[in-house]
Length: 143
Image 1 (cartoon, rainbow, N blue to C red):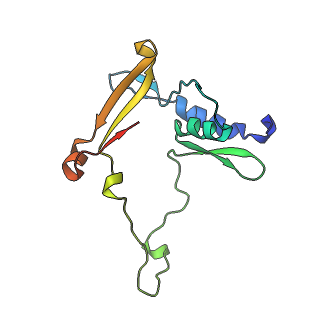
Image 2 (image 1 turned 135 degrees about the horizontal axis):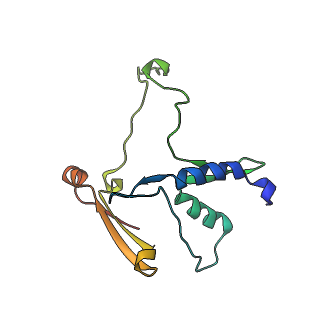
Image 3 (image 1 turned 120 degrees about the horizontal axis):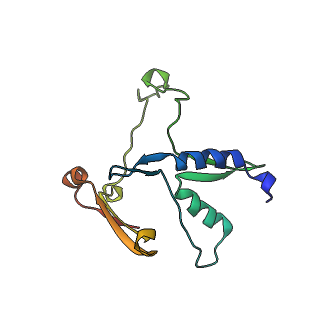
C-alpha cells in the first residue's frame, strides 16, 4: 500500500473536525479530539489502524482501489426517510423497530487513559448518567 492508495483528503477532513475547539467544561476550550498513543506490542496493521480510527469516531474502508475513511459526525441530510417513503409488507408493517438488550445499555463508564497532566501516568475517569441509572440500573462498562 503506497501513499497514492490512501485518501489523504478524507483524513484531512477528519483532522479538521477533530481539531475544532469545543468547550472544555471549565470555561475554556480544547480540541474536539486528541490522541496520544504508544505501541507496546506488535499487532496486525489493520487492527492498529482500526483502533486509531475508533478514537476519532471513524472507520477505515477499502473500496477496492483506495483506503478511505468515514467519520461519524454531523452533516447535511442526504435523504429524509418518513413513513410515506417505506413500502409496507403483507402484514401491514412498514418500519420495524428493534432495541438493544438491557445488558448492553451502559449507564456508567470507567475509562483508563494516559494522562499528560499527571506525568503520563494512568488515570481513571468515571462518568455516570443519573437518569439512565434510575431507569435501567447501574451498568458499568470498564475501558
